[in-house]
Image 1 (spheres, one colour):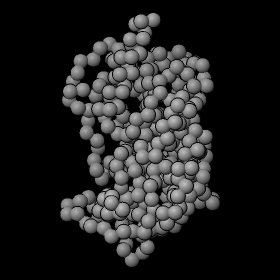
Image 2 (cartoon, one colour; image 1 turned 90 degrees about the vertical axis):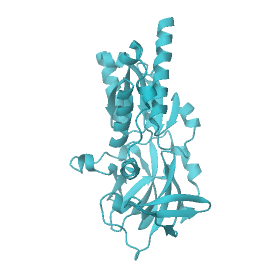
Image 3 (cartoon, one colour; image 1 turned 45 degrees about the vertical axis):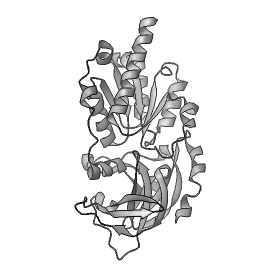
Image 4 (cartoon, helix red, strand yellow; image 1 turned 135 degrees about the vertical axis):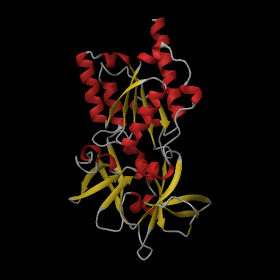
Length: 315
């Protein structure tokens, strides 16, 4: 099963073309689910696991594979379905999210499919609302595939990241900080909340958008209307993988629009393990930052504000 990912390095060429590849799998039923191949390191039959006392109910155990030890989460149980039984075949999808490695227990692995982000849509209204574990849906072979919000799953298991440190949160803010505005773009409700909380703790106003297409429409609308928020926007903080338009394509669109090309773009994503840094330069982004360390994000935002303020003062 590990061979299904042998060519994952070659798949980085999809970046910047508003395309993605999904690993499709099942969780004990006919419904198929998907996660981005870029976040998958390996797929293998379920290894021997050691159950840890007082661990979260979703954690089936800890596995040790080729010198690495990592937790294995029952993904079916994590999204509110029944746990996978030990009587059926089980596989572990080893992933890297937000600088940590974990395995997800699944009942079957289907295949990898190549899709356009335009064909990936946000979950339909009424599909669980804030309780939903989905970031998007798409169709494969005329069947609905549900794309799981893994950041939501991990937050439920390991908890919300610590807030900005007291030293940074309580530091005095100058006028440049209090007047600055940031547009944050992410398809995960959990991630948007984390970013907003971090920015609020350092006194920076922000607007949130669910995906790249909505962010682009918002910025173009602000520019047309000469909205004060546009004049105060010092940074666009964007996830990379999002339905309808990914962060790479959003950056490319910004750089091709004379009204928007000056905007500072920070690609802020959980694709930390396989991120191709050359793509930052290729699409014209200013910086990449792996999720999610509140102090790191706060530091990047504050430095950007101070740099922009210094340039404006010198002009």
